[in-house]
Length: 74
Image 1 (cartoon, one colour):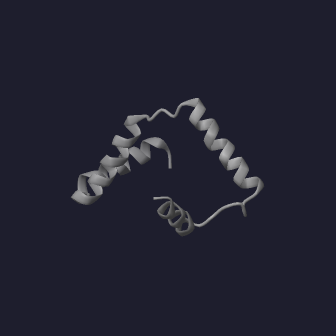
Image 2 (tube, helix red, strand yellow):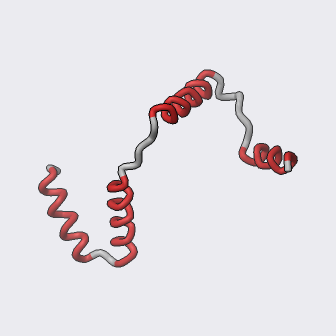
């Protein structure tokens, strides 16, 4: 399906969609328009942490264990 056909089908769908689906579609469009910027330094940290995880995936703790540790620190 080419872009023109997709646009036509979406227009037809939107004309008949219920409010819930229209709100979902609009939310996706609004989020895309925000064009959120991630600073290079932050992207680098995320990439470094992902690389560390990929090198040693067993060096992790569960979400429940993390929450427990945080609670103990309070």
